[in-house]
Amino acid sequence: VVGPALGAIHWELYVAQALERKLCKDSKNACDTTGSAEQLEHLAGLSAQARAEKPLVKAVFAEKIPEDPGFAIRRGIELKPGEKILVVEDVTTTGGSARKVVEMLKTIGCDPVAVGAVVDRSGGKASFDVPFINLLALNLETYEPDSCPLCEQGSAAIKPGSTIK
Image 1 (cartoon, rainbow, N blue to C red):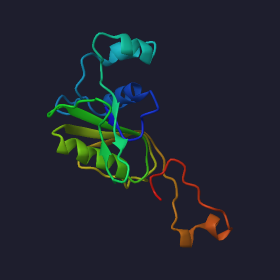
Image 2: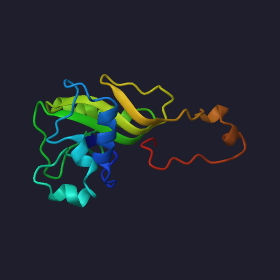
Image 3: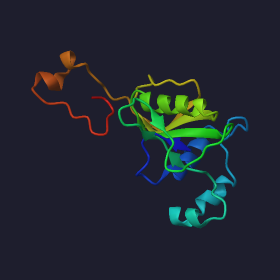
Image 4: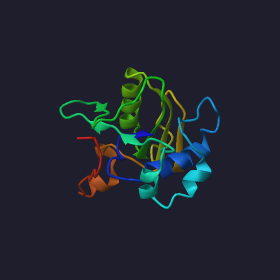
């Protein structure tokens, strides 16, 4: 599991389990794991996962590269060519960050099998060259500044967590 925005959020494995149950049941699309989903359900928490002899799913995160539009796998993490990877992010708005992670993984020889999101707020507009799955889809209205009703009322736009400048 590789995610562009999950570095400080430690529920990647549970999200991966939910997403895998939803779509990745087909053996050619299954992510590399060393255990069953039922075993993951019985873990009391990530501390138990860390003590496990073999992790059921390896979870790492892609870091933004300063002064660069891309992402990198750093901090001593090694991904091997041919590894099947599920790219996961918390919220998909445009899909730009996940798309960059998919491309980065391909350049190091990994096999991204799907992109998953806890929440898809793209209104069905996010698309990838691998399956896209989500746990919750929200169709939230977005506006350009010249047609935004809140902007017309003088409200300032707030973009917490956004990569848009």
